Image 1: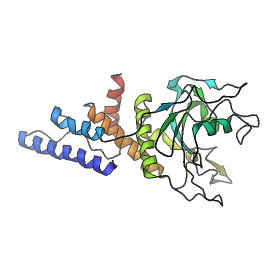
Image 2: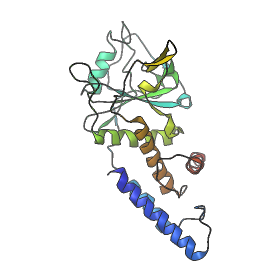
Image 3: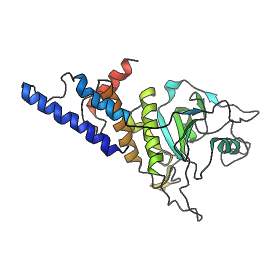
Image 4: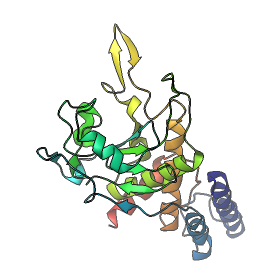
Length: 265
C-alpha cells in the first residue's frame, strides 16, 4: 500500500473533523476528543500497512570462536543506521564473511555486524541482539543500531547507480517506525551510514569529503525519514493520541503525542 493512499484516508478524517467542529461551533484546534468512528480511520490506515513479521536468527548464525562484542543497555541506543550489503545475499553469508578476516578486522568480527537485515523479498531478519555493540559505524557503534538492506547499489565498475526496489524501502520505513516507537526515537534519528561524520564523511582541508555512499546514492534518506514519521503518526492516531495530518512532519503535535505514547508503556 502506497503512502499516498494512506495519506488520503487520514485527510478524510481531518476534513470530517473540520465539518464537525464548524457545525458545533468548536474552534478548529484539533484538540477536542475524537469519536471512535473517526479514530477508526487511523486504525484502518494502519491495517493497510503490511510487512512481514521479523524472523529471529540470532541463535542460528555463526559467531567468532574467540571474540565477543561489548554489551550495552537498550536505553543507550540513540539512532538507527541504515546500510546496504551491496549484493543480494543472506544473513548467513554475511555472518560467515564478518567472522573471518575482512575489511573491518584482520582477525574477523565477533559476530555479524548488523542487528537486522531486510532481504530482497522484504523478509526482516533479526540477526544480533540490540544489547550487543556491533562493529558497523566506528565511533558511533556504542549508540547505534544497524539495519542492512540486501540489494546491489553498484555496477561492475563500482559506480553507485542502482536503487533498491520500492517495496524494500517501504519495509525499511515501517520497520524503522516500529523500532522508533519501541525505543523512544524520533524519525530524525534514522540516518544513513554516509551521514555520519568520521565513517560516512570527514573534513579534508576545510571541505566535507564523502567517504561512503552507503546505503546507496539512490536512497533518498530525507524521504525515508518522512515516511517513518508518517507511519508513526498513523500509529499514534490509531492509539487515540494524535489527530493531525499524516504529513511526515514530526513537529510539536506529533512529539506531544509521542511522549504520551511513551508514558503509557
